Amino acid sequence: MIATFTHLTGSRRGLCEKFQEEVISIGRAADNALCFGAHERRVSSHHAQINRHGDTFLLRDLGSTNGTMINGRRVIISELNADDLIEVGAGGPLLRFGLEQAVEVPQTAATSPSANAHTASGNSPFAAPPASLTLLLKNFLKQRKTNVRLTSAILISMIFGAGFGIWLSVNINPADRFRTVAERNSAAVVFIQTEYELVDSNGKVVAIESRTGTGFIINDQGLIVTNRHVIRDWEYNPPPAGLNGRSKSISVVLEGHKREEAIAANVAQLSSDKNLDVVILRIAPPPDVPTIYGVETNVERLRQGDEVATIGYPLGISLLPDSRLMTSFTTGVISRIGADVIQLDLHAYHGNSGSPVLNRQGAVIGIVTANATDAPEIIFCTPIGVVEEMISSHSSLVLSP
Image (cartoon, rainbow, N blue to C red):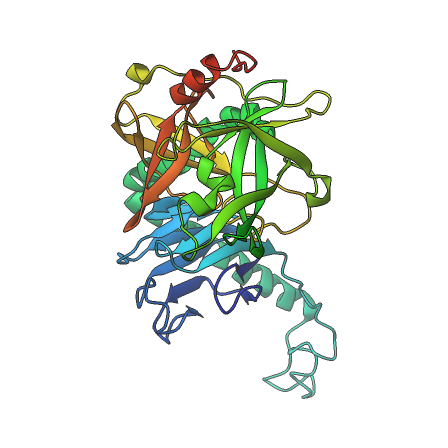
């Protein structure tokens, strides 16, 4: 198998590098197989290493300064699967891992090293052995090589088995345990694109800006929850003096659909002020519109250390390999619980704003809202109870049961 790494960010964006080596070193230093160069300051000199074991690839962080993330989750060692996203250092280069089948070139008589190896007469002491004996020797050596590899593998398993197995169960299994959660909710998570105009005091349009984010459908009436800053960015990132923002358009794309199939959306209810970073949108719901599995509005039922997941569209649609939009799934844990905010240990990106935060049962407990500037793995989410309060104050809006 050939390991492929497609650069998704930076000056190498779009470049695909391929490796067949058993060990692939990753880092900033020039002696790495996958070298990022001295300018990538988020990458350590010898950042990580990927070891191949048959058709399995294991990534191991080498004690890097900024860590290594797979699909948004920081890891020390973890198995790689096709289409995994590898972030080399928090905020550093982003790669998509892939696998290609190696093409074996058949050996012909003309290229075979043994075809013309011996031309001496049959009575020469160095004459070539009979073909049957040659085949027997080859099979013996091949079997011996296989036995050596098997013995080595068993020894390695005996040395590292217990601790390594426990570690892998902690780092790989959460996604497996959350598979049902993803199946219950992914279809209800939508991609949101907004456009807004910057206008001067005379109402003249000076510029048109666009932003992307994530939202989730809460009922079959087509109500969608997301962050206020996704559709009113100018309130959180003030434009130049003398200019003001004005919403131009809001569009929504369902998972598995193309961008051209976007549905127009409008604001059903805006939070009372921008510090409460929530907005409810409305679309004309298509037949059998998917909705989230449920909500958990009682924060008293949450505990530090509870596993959670989020589903969204990180970095907008720039990472998508084709025209149909697909969600990204990330797991983490609750690190702090407050009445107005829930803090998570979970890696999210631009574009995840408005994503649902889900508990182990698949119920939404909050909305991804912001992250700590100097610690991107610290995420703040708004409790879903805020949405319930907004809806209860508006008689025409109904929250999903």
